[in-house]
Image (tube, rainbow, N blue to C red; front, side, top):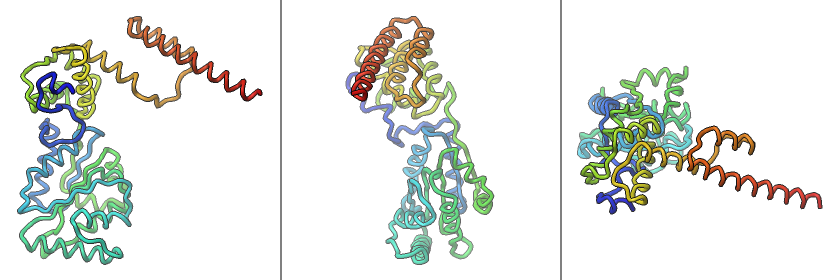
Length: 321
């Protein structure tokens, strides 16, 4: 929608991971360096963790784009809730190995495939995304795959990418053998305030931005404060900000514009915690601000409360009958 209004060639803040928008922050550069180091070593495990929306998948896809397909056979496995009984079959499928009737035959088929890859002068790389979802037993199965060797050379290199919970899995007592196979591990944190601004301008530049619409210093600071420097949250907020700008015919954004969009998004978000009592909610709203926009929302909420009370009264009357 707003792409045409602002003269962009595409949506700069789409949520789908796209390596074309890869932003090399300090953290992302270091994580990428660890992945490339793992490729150079061609053995063991590389573990990359990060919060939801930190850019892990975009990082992986950027790496995959750089791989030489004539030298590396890569397979990516995006896990759900996989246990030991499923993980081997999923790995085989990811490499295009036909499914087998049982675990033993699956292992034999995988080993034969990996040997053929090595004999062709190539490397086999397995990337497991969302690794926090697999069970410790399934992780142990992945470790067992790292035992496949041809002479002194490992047949499989594995990258484990997951959310912070996966670090807890790695620290379990039964994971000691796997930890010994990890040659590098890195936790990808959020962007800082300077990187957040550079990230926004980078993504805008990728779609032909020439400085319009403009973001003043206050807007950048508010975006960072509202998102904690998490790339996916920045994308969500900036996407809505540009949509709001188009609807409001704006060519520049300030802190007030960011605040307005944040309030709209908060109002749209479903309530997770138990809702407060009507009286407590009214008092909290009155105490929070005396701005006109707050009063409008308060009136709307009071109307909802009255309708809810009326509906409950109607139900009670029906039950009494």
